[in-house]
Length: 70
Image (cartoon, rainbow, N blue to C red):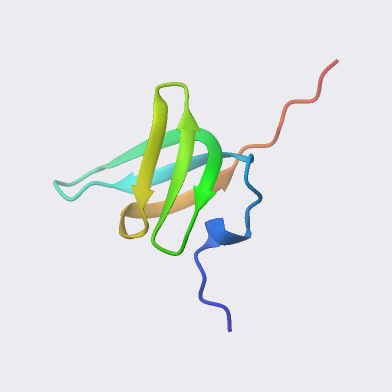
């Protein structure tokens, strides 16, 4: 059974929402493109810059489908 984090199976460049648990309590979402992934962390390129998220903070990962042009 593979126990790798879900983001290891997502291709780089994919747009994601990542819900993170903060040690002080509560959650926050980050939206961006997956630029780097390892077992310990993932990195998103967000509109506010690079965001490195540690594996233990990740509560949820959701792929955002790309928009279809008209």
